[in-house]
Structures are given as structure tokens and as C-alpha cells.
Picture 1 (cartoon, helix red, strand yellow):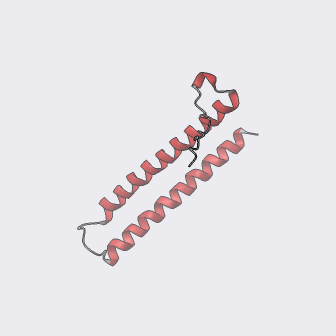
Picture 2 (tube, one colour):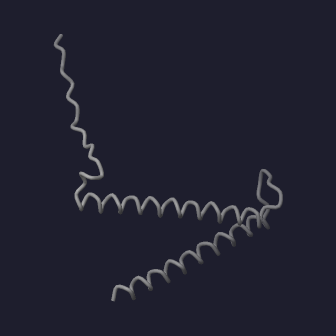
Picture 3 (cartoon, rainbow, N blue to C red):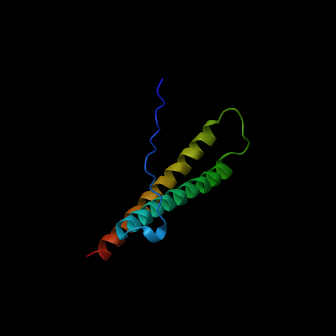
Length: 98
């Protein structure tokens, strides 16, 4: 039996000082995207707590129709509000770019 030498893939470890402008811009873009995801997730969790507190009087194995309708309406309001805010921000950005 022959022993095979293992080849390791070259490691791409660079410090921040070694990053080029394009790499730094890409890294900043990725960090910003992750921050937006984290902010959105936190907002959803906060919203769900609000809807839960408003709609669920006593937790059980099943949701009664009143609780189900309340949660559905609460989520619908959240979606409508999010879409309105997103649309408004898009308008502001579009006007700023002209």
C-alpha cells in the first residue's frame, strides 16, 4: 500500500488591512445585509409578541375562531404597514437619486 500525501486547499486568510477596495466594499455589503436580516427578524419577533399579547387570552392546544381571526388581522396589518413603509422609502430613494 502506498501512502498518499494529503493536499490541503490553500487558505485565504487575509487581514482587514490586506483587503482591496472591492473586497472591502463586498464585505461591507454583506455585513449590511446581515444587519438588515437581524433587524427584520427582531422586528418580526417584537410584532409577534404584540399580536400574541393582544389576541391570545389563554394558551391552549387549539386556537378558537376569535383568537385565530385576531391573529390573522394583526398579521395583515403588519404586512400592510410594512409594504406601505417600504414603498414610501423606495419613493424617497428614487427622488433622491434623480
